[in-house]
Image (cartoon, rainbow, N blue to C red):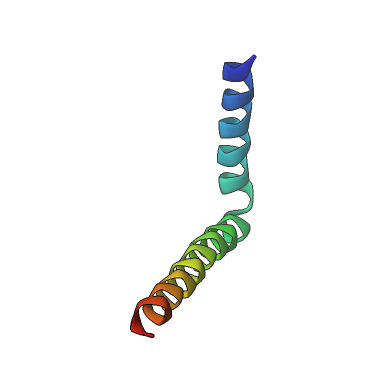
Length: 52
């Protein structure tokens, strides 16, 4: 069952990439932007934690 769901998810991603390339690119930019923002905030937290 788990393999079937994995294959279905991969098939959906491939389908989405080919039918909506602009939407897929925006989604990827959003994910990486969120990761970058989180890393920046974590860095600021530890900087303020150890500098004061």
